[in-house]
Image (cartoon, rainbow, N blue to C red; front, side):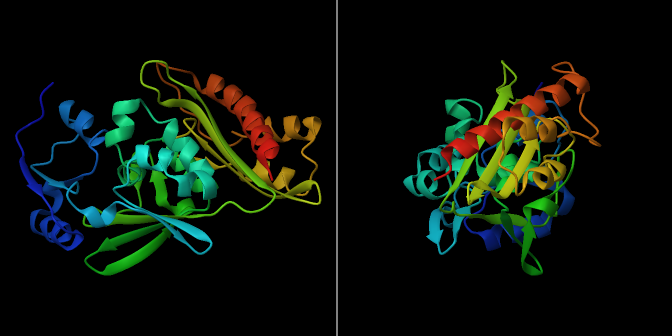
Length: 287
């Protein structure tokens, strides 16, 4: 299908983007990389009358090493994340998830901010940011605010960013000594979207699991932290039996998705397997 007619404006700064959003109200949509919004417009599931393009705002494209965290601009592409030495060395989970997104064209144009605000239930980046205890910096008419990753994904295709706000920055924890991370997914063959994806961060203490974060995407209406798995494994030796028992219930209490690609039961079953594999891989990388 063809989108309905719309006006196009390229904002030159965050302030200008906010002014345009305020002027046009609900008729306006922000355009980042376009790989989430444009397909919806072609299907007429999104029908904005004004597109406000963020692509010319250079101040939103960066990767910075800042103390115990890595700061990433909202318009930073997947390719930049996957290839950045700073990310690869100090937040490798983010690089691994970015490298798993779509194909070369998508990785070169798609942005981390666009992905997170779109809040696709199968988002690779959402799982990584959740596992890294990410913090989103959002700017709007009332100023700047911070949203933790655990509160950012509200529901199916719904994030905590208001229509008149811009996600300007994502901050994640640096990897620590004696820690490892991994992102594994079972992709839908045609699109590359995760039928199931699991991001894990493990920190060892005295040979046991001192800290663990497990985030799952593709299974439920929104990506989620597997709190029950984390609680069972924290303080354990991460032996095979303990892992199997803990991971078996990773989707317990979750309203799993069922569609033409996979049933809810299949997604739950695969989630258990991929959670175990992701944890095993993260543990093997701990250093």
